[in-house]
Length: 570
Image (cartoon, rainbow, N blue to C red; front, top):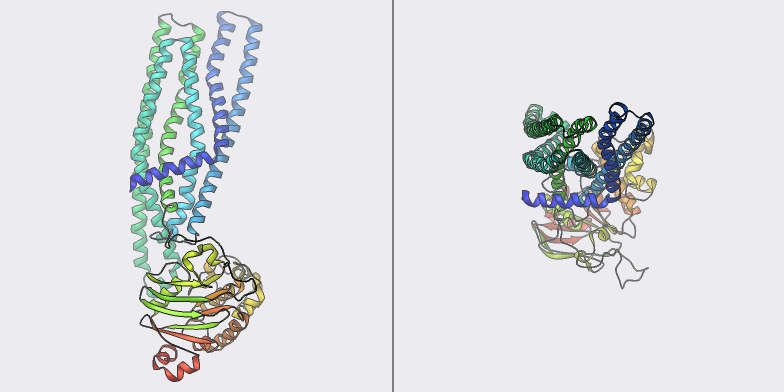
């Protein structure tokens, strides 16, 4: 599994570089020009020393000093422009990965959040995306350092063949050792990110349920749980830091030994008279220059290890299979062969079997307002999940205007069918923003759902902020705003699951009338046991034991079915 993730991670990194190839190439060219300029500086200083001391020539000295100044200008500009190109490439690459991750998380097929708490997904979409995108900055720096080393070697070859060969042969060995030493860091960096993501997920869960924990008196248990999770994350971070310290320390030691070897060979050549004073200055300057590119190469190895680990985690999310099967038909939101002015929104459940539902047959005509009472709450959840096509049934099928759900692309299906599940979350922002999040106007839907009364109680009315997940509102207020959002979307088919469980009876009755009026002519299914809502339905379908037990208007079922009375009135 880890090898597969590593291969997928490499594919992600290749995609990052391909997507930012122009900026990466610009960073490589500009960075290389900077490194070549850095390598030329010691040589030019050596020439100037020759012109000033060994063979004094004021005019020649002035010309070479001017050349030195020009090289300084170019290497400075190359560094600044190259760094800017690299930073842009890194930021844009990270942004692209975040957008890909968000598209996958929001994909109608679902599945991305399976086994991953929200905090873990946030970590992948932020820290891991940033680290993976950083490869677009790291590679130009590494390429520039390699060019600098090559330029230094060539310049040394001109001064002394032994010194040049020493660097040409020793540098690849040093780079290979750097990659080898980075292997443990890559593994431990992956574990570090996994633990950090888990800790973020636990923290998000605890923050979301803090009121429940306080009510249960479970703060100490929750604190202990987070302490253990945080400690495990800390231990993983320390292990990764130790691996990085070992890798960095060993590389610096090897680099120091290498430079010492170069200095030793250069000193012997000077003593033997093979090179002069100018060449000696150039050689010493190049020897002092070499640790910079070598350090960059060492840093690049560590950063690439981190990028590969993060890219593997990004790839795992992107490659997560969906909860539902791929569409077998065209991604269209309309049904071919149906006149534009024909009624739309017919829903049919044909032998639907899944998670306790056992061969449910139910037909809802276009524009019909139908209540659905399910005696088992788990079966109601399953029915809603199937209607939302978050799962595909084990047997049977669902149809929209005669077309099976599986032949409509999920996005196209959701453009016509909206399922408002029980406990739908609100978003940080204003009341108005939440109601119109999926389109439509504010006031008609708000009036129908009773959300206008919520606005009247808030300073700022519809422009009042509701806080993260609507925590500044009561449970009943959140339900009214969520219902208003579903009504404002004005879909052909609306399925609502228990929208008024936290609302008082008088308000619930007004809301029932409002839903009926605003949804007139549109297909509506209310999965609920609320008598007020069921009373305004054209008919009610009673599902018991996973099977359709009865169908009739609410009043008739109350008279003739003791099972219905128990489910609705008890």
